[in-house]
Length: 258
Ligand SMILES: NC(=O)c1ccc[n+]([C@@H]2O[C@H](COP(=O)([O-])OP(=O)(O)OC[C@H]3O[C@@H](n4cnc5c(N)ncnc54)[C@H](OP(=O)(O)O)[C@@H]3O)[C@@H](O)[C@H]2O)c1
Image (cartoon, rainbow, N blue to C red; front, top):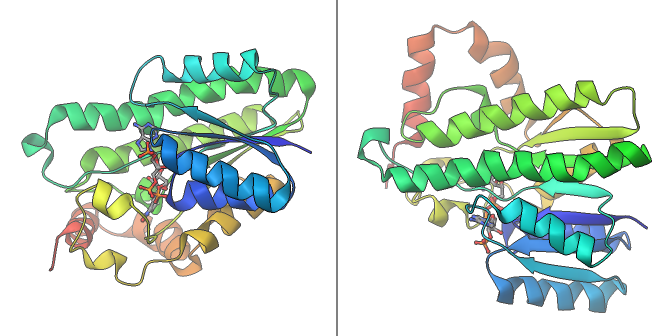
């Protein structure tokens, strides 16, 4: 069975993606900063499914994180067949009023470490002519996000990057899929200072979003949305609306109403 490396496996969508892969008897490499949560998930999944889960604690905001993770899996003789780049976070507020260090860390986690991990693990996948990559982006990728300017831009990067490499890999058996969730009930809201935003009032469950992404990845789909109506709006309505209307509408969705 295949081994999947999941970043951001300590909570939310990442933990559910790990549970799904474990339930299919796949081994796991669980990556995040919170070691206790990773170890709890490791025990749960090894106990439930008889699989092997390896914990690697890493802060993906550090520039050398991806190289250290790769070195750790190499040293342990683990072949990563599936790479799930899920770790990420947002942050609320006007860009010029935000702490630039937080936005730099966000860019490092959401983009740079994702690119580095992909580069490191993709080499082996291509040489074996086998492998799957799932990137967790967001519906935020499809329009600019006033009050979350950097976060939305990082997710636009991920959607572009994933599709471009998918095309480069089209003559191989390696696939790159990007998942674009709408609002999901996870630790994301607290981590990004987004409490009080009504967008999360009817948020999807992380289980349902993980299932959507995992199935799309297994089929090698290019882009996956868990909310069909939002996908329609973003692909077929928003691109034809006046730019300033889109920006005002987008800002309203990020305003805190409570
Ligand atoms: N929830 C939503 O509404 C929503 C919507 C669209 C897209 N997404 C995307 O979904 C992905 C997963 O988020 P989630 O909703 O499941 O939120 P979450 O519960 O907050 O999970 C985020 C995960 O990322 C990890 N992470 C954050 N910073 C990290 C760092 N510096 N180093 C290593 N790991 C780090 C966290 O682990 P540690 O804290 O243990 O390090 C955690 O496991 C993110 O990419 C997010 O942008 C979420």
